Image 1 (cartoon, one colour):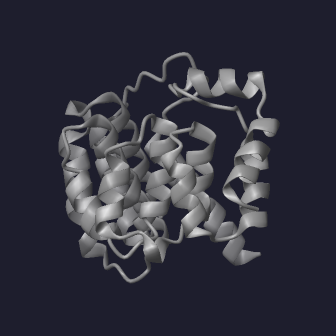
Image 2: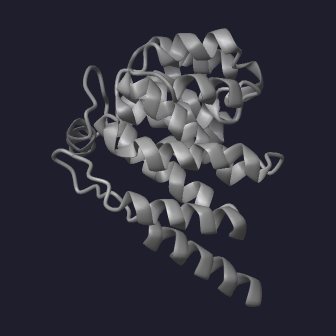
Length: 227
């Protein structure tokens, strides 16, 4: 499928109900309202197509950009291209999809370390989302890599902007799920942090309790290993 065909397909798959849902989550501008199930089907059909991904991103259409992050080649996402894209995210939904892509690139650690320090709410949140992805997926990193971030989360989470608080809490959970040693340290941090208050606007989203989530994940992992 070429660019024009993909855009036509996206437009045909959109619905007003999905557009309303996206808008409640802060999506603005041009949006067709394509469900994630349909986006996943398109992703499987298109596979990795980096040239098409860059064309879709350039449209600034919400659905096209989400699909773009799904079919882009992480190996071709240079540091400069990552910087260009993060300066033009548009909304938090695209930011989350972009973070998943960025976490699979060779620049993931470098960009996470830079972006997580940003005072821009959206860029900062992407940085912390990447950290969570690294905790869950990068087995090469030692515990010592994550321990300073646990200290930062414990010390600073309540002082950060709304969206950043939410993703820092997610990073805390991800680190706590990594292994028993980090689980113990993450649980200790969560106890000191207490409740994390996040305004989710006109949505049904909730902020997970880190302690509860980490312990449930540990119990599931233990049950799976004994099965």
